[in-house]
Length: 316
Image 1: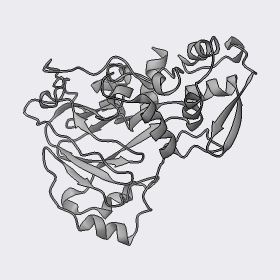
Image 2: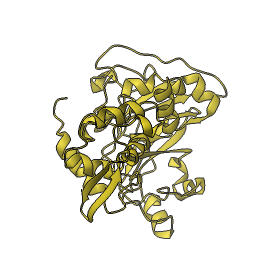
Image 3: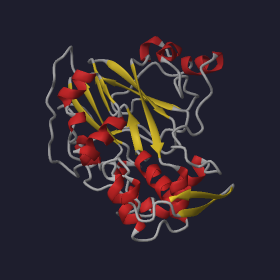
Image 4: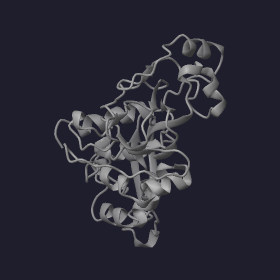
């Protein structure tokens, strides 16, 4: 992998996830914006009322839809650019696994047996090497002790960098709000002018967001019918992709792929930042080729969660 410092990535994640003595959370909400209120509403209403077909509409102002806000939060946006749907951007990495990786990870053959058991997401403790052995993990708030079996369970809970939902069916002209719940995310189309395979409808430009600050957002209006494959530029090497299907009613458009550049990656580098522990989260290509993200399934379901994509991948 060229140009990515995995050690620095792991340490930055440790800081952003605030690893502490509890340390077993998934770190899915980091620096979330304040709840919707008058100040947020005023900030949103002071913005541009135009969504550019290439650059969309970015906002560093507090996002009224951050966290657990319901769809009523859409009313905080000006009518001309009001979202119809929301996609959140998350980091699903247990802080304790990052801390364990920082101190060298597990020894062999423990790592191998954990990975074998985690591959299908179902841990059978007796199949692990010394499942009751304890491991001391150093965190900024002190040492934490976990058994090998408990660490294996954390590996299966790891879902990595992701959009949620990972698949969404919308109507032509709908606006999607991309909410940054955790750091360093962005949105880009698989497009030839980004040096990628073209995986968006004909005549659609190379749209992309800037890097979105935590608590900020980006909006894009999907005008043209078809299938859109999107990726997070900083995190596509970890499998962070999604699919948007744009059509009227139950119409299922076909995915158009032109080999104009780099295809979605077939490897994920999560094990490299997790001390060789492998949660078997799909690569970019692996995610986009799961049955869960088939356009027909997305139209049928309306939305497809990232958890469903991971489960589909692990059990295929």
